[in-house]
Length: 303
Image (cartoon, rainbow, N blue to C red):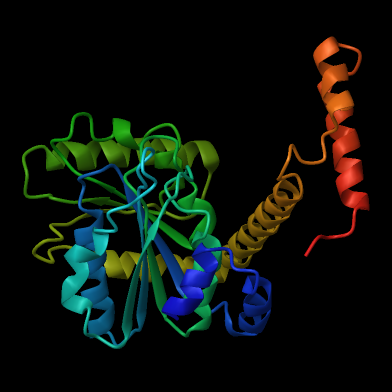
């Protein structure tokens, strides 16, 4: 499995063949995304969830996305340090992946890596994002259930959940709830969720769970909320809808990547005369782009 994930990260030429072989074996895992600002305890919460799921006899896969340096391109891949207690469990697989400059809190390889873990027979796949701000909401498009984690004492805690992050949360967690200000954070969150529910008329009542993940406090309640959301998704038909939209986004991303690949090398398929005509104002950029796309779609695929 580690080798398959390496093929995914490296975009190996054999990847289409691998994905074709894995396709019939997926669709069973509950994919749970965990996101939040840096320092709220995402890795500790992930580790506590692994413990709870394993106690229930469930196999767990984990993808922990670490940020890559914008200068060296390297990544520490240190999230799994907080999960080292599970390293010897044969029913737990933890993989750290580098974001490699991809925005949105995940890495470009995340969707296909999720398919590998799903096909491998894991009951639950946890996806821990990099520390995110207000607009990095890609995890919601990749997960069945999205958990947004906040912590008191980090400035305006609810402010960190506004403008996108608040809207993607299926379950909210106020971690480090033994700190001062936890009650205020919970109260503000519930108020904002009520406003959002009235605006969007959704029939899922978004819970707010208080946890102290380092001690395991509140984790059983969180697991119950995750199970309840999975049941609601299945009963309402939203699970199929979410997975169809996820597949649509993956298809689009792969198609766009193929077009970019065809455009690579020595300036790609954009002729100098076409670029010159745009620069001179005799052709507009949309017409030029249309001609490039038409040429790409007519060309046979390069091996």
